[in-house]
Image 1: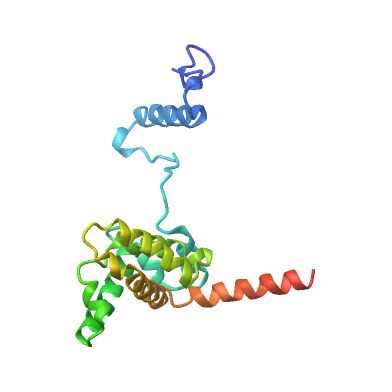
Image 2: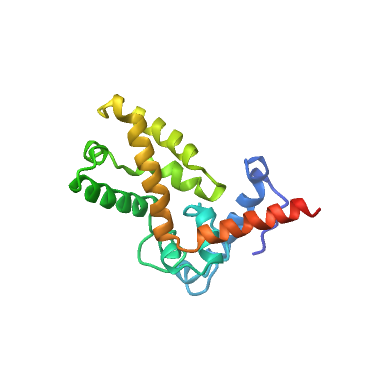
Length: 193
């Protein structure tokens, strides 16, 4: 039996994404008609999903950066990776080492080096976030932590911003060099056009 999708009630046309709904319906029918059974149907239906820090994915791919590619789930692994968690772990290791060496703000930050505190700074690195911008982002996050001592927010934000930006460079070894190259090409093009 052939189905004419342009006849009948055409309920799919009233949906928010009508062509995606229609494509999905056609794929379901194809799966149900598979002679070997639904589970044997090889779907060609595109699945939309968010990337894992897309900008850093591009830099990792451009630089053939294996460690960075792994951190943003570009390499085939059993489980999705978490670049924000990876950076948080490196920042925490540095904080712990600094605390052992007597750095006071590192001691104060014990228990406060959290993924949500540094996530925005990691995410905006590819857009050229400056140290100043990262400090402002981290300050906002620290202010939202109820039990963080408010008198240390500025000093802690500076410490975490520096540590976060340097930690990204430890994971993505080529991204900073590529960014600088893009910037120099941009400047050259602007000057010579």
